[in-house]
Image (cartoon, rainbow, N blue to C red; front, top):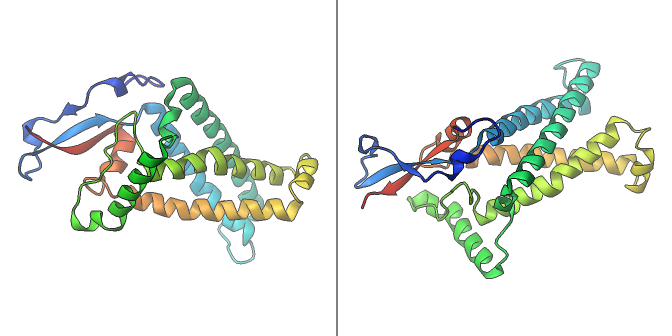
Length: 238
């Protein structure tokens, strides 16, 4: 892999794994693609750890009479700490993608016809094709990581829902400091409800995300790639 915060390796051509690594399915071989740069992998796992801590402590804070994992005071302190870790991590994510010019991987195809066609094809694969052994219609590359459905999901999550979660979290962190903003947002109950709703959404999304992460060429293909940066995809020898 390249040096930290350096994506040069992502520009290399896909390297075909030697014949010894053939999968045994006819002429199928495996192509090794450098898909996730080091900063993306670091961001991903810091994000995952922060979300896990925030979900657990959030449950403790919300249901302190029913859940007794730790004291309320400790839960609040840990929740606040990882909240700021998440904010800093999100800032680094935004900075990296803006400076590298790779934010475009989150942007859906501006050609509406192509976008709709690709979304329908991908939805069919998730609903039917994957269960009968069809090939995934989308093949990830460093410049095209996400299929049309993923682009819509991640675009809204990273550029809309995450900022909303951060803003509502900050308002609840210091009610007095942000009292004016809270009033404009509809009051404390409205801010609290919004933060809770988004928390439930992100919790549900994590389960979906983990499930989809197992749908690669093998169960661990996508997960392994988020550690090593490299992903193996089936190819066909000519």
